[in-house]
Image (cartoon, rainbow, N blue to C red; front, side, top):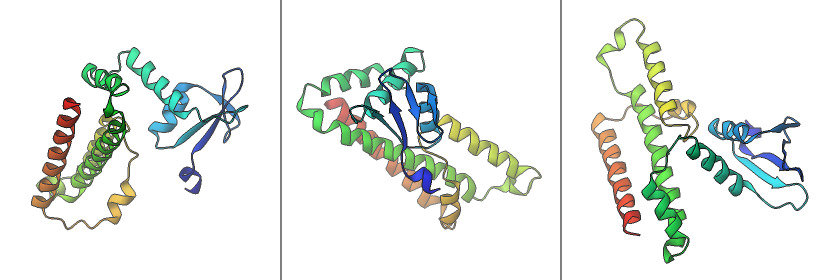
Amino acid sequence: MAEDAKPLLIKRYASRRLYNTETSDYVTLEDIAAFIRDGREVQIVDLKSGDDLTRQYLLQIIAEHESRGESVLPIDVLTDLVRSYTTSAQSVVPQFLAASFEMLREGQSKMLENLSTFPNPMSSMPGFEALQRQQQAFLRSMMGGLAPARESEAEEKPKGKAKGKDEEDLEAIKKQLAELQSKLSRL
């Protein structure tokens, strides 16, 4: 576990090859994307200069996925991002994006937690637990690896919340996200 807490160090050689210092082998951008989807933090540095190249490579991974038709970012969002580099909004955009993704991660965690905490009349059916595990796996895959699965966290949290409170929390998150999206549109 302690190894997962520190970023996986990837060194870029002069030949532009990427070297995984943990496994002592070369990796591709797709390998790095897989590490990130699995919940690992990654740091990419230039071997010779020591410059941090992480941002550059993460943007390259995103650009490759977008160019293959795996579009996640709508054109309007991309356009607004380009505009933000030349306006006073430049200082607001990073905080807004970070807050939006944090809300999305929290929403995902709550949804997965709610699957296991809400009483379900079908829970007495044989095979229900297996079906519930499949639903949770499906939701995690649909969220595209935005956050690593936190099943141990969900198990540690008290499960006695009332259904109404969870729904209120989800509605509050939806409202906050809508407000943030509105602010971004105005920028």
